[in-house]
Amino acid sequence: MGIKNPAVTILRVVGIIFIIVAVINIVVGGIMFFVSKSYDDKYKDAYEITATVEKVVYSSSKNSSSNSSEIYVDYELEGKSYHHVKLVMTINANDYTEGDTMTIYVPKDDPKAASMSNTAVVFYIIFGVFGGIGVFFLIISIVLLIVAGKIKKKAKTQPFAYPPANF
Image 1 (cartoon, rainbow, N blue to C red):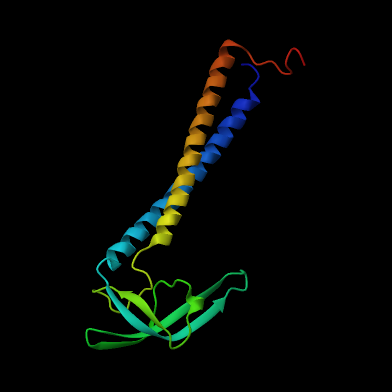
Image 2 (image 1 turned 45 degrees about the vertical axis):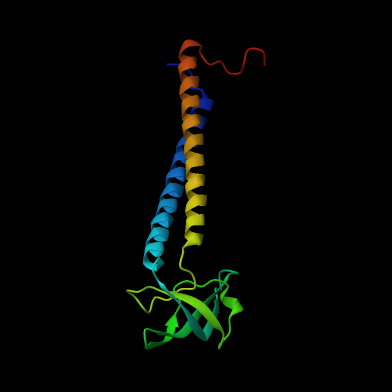
């Protein structure tokens, strides 16, 4: 048994790490795709109605610089009034104050699941980003493992000498 080529070991380890990163990204992307699809299915035939902002609750995380807002609205649908309904999805929530009107989407089968959007574009973007990164890392990992295999195969016919003869 000869000396192991460190390049093969490094390529294999990096290839395996990239496969793990690829699988994680593809799984996250897949989850985002199914969340998007589910959201779109729920809101595709939703009522488009005008609602009045009842309350905007601003909150910020102590551990993060990000702020989030919750919007509560009042609206009427098919002769029935709905009050203090928290929106499922908000977009630019900080642009709204109490008393403002806005267009919301309410699914026919769940009148308390109001949303500011009838499509999950953000989730599709996340799906594309994570899925694309996952595929990229998967391709790179396959190339690295193939190169490692070729180096190892070549080393069987031509032993690895360290340091090189003309060093």
